[in-house]
Length: 403
Ligand code: GCO
Ligand code: MG
Image (cartoon, rainbow, N blue to C red; front, top):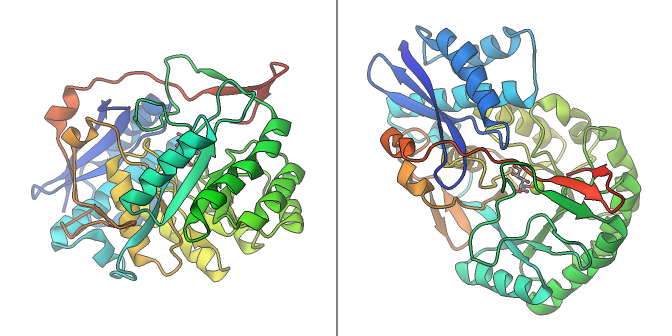
């Protein structure tokens, strides 16, 4: 089954997405998500200028061979741009394989290992009262797991807080990076109060998650974890920048609060030590940034050997194509933990026709052949690229801090 065309479409239906479209000689088309938030055109060029020409004439059925060809064959391995580009090819080829077989991708991956995928939604507020309102809204929608974030008193802006207009939280908000401020002491003081508030209001019958967004040192993270233990969070996410994997030993020495890491990882090598030393509980690598379905399964298989569960990134900057692909992986692996689900801003649904469903806190990818997402290129053309950057984070003295 020869590939006859491979093209990249950059569009902005609600936010920027980069979509790879692969066509085959028998008329089957597959899509993959190549979005790298704030660096979209780098991946678009990597694909359009270097990989798409090499796809023409290749056999679309040989997914593992394509993966190895583009990973090992480039000589320059890893990195978010390379691995996002490979991921888009990989997902598009799984989509094609599913359509050729007349099966949803999760069937090709071994079939359903569960009835549905537990997802967590985002509740946030500029005050604890607003957070409660949003939390209640998510409970009413049926969520069994909810992430809680609230503005830290005394700081201008805090990441992860949705605007009051009811729109989804979108961190890439301006065409030059917005500058936020950060103060660790205020945060460490506030976080246990926020968690106490949520438990007082809503009890312990719901999973509560919290994202630290790489802001702490390992010993500060240990202190945070210890201070939250009594509120039994499902996890704390990205407590420190994770390039230094051995630093997580220090966090582990100080707390039993479960730890989730990995949305910025792009390869199994980024989390090898974290997994094999059991320094984390959930690995958050995503289909679109960690080399596609093929590589993500390799990471999750390694994690399974060490009792680490999946908890994939699913923010709105992962397009419906990679979100659907994630659900297929989640359905089929033995060590699924939880899946982030933030949803997509309008008018994304005019461009991506999805077949996944949400029901009472659980999602299902649907049974359409392939990944179950159809991409409307004519609709995408109505929403041209709109450059946007993630914010930069500064301490009160003006120095740049981790974001
Ligand atoms: C999350 C994330 C996101 C990221 C965003 C970056 O847990 O969902 O931390 O909000 O900041 O995906 O592009
Ligand atoms: Mg996060």
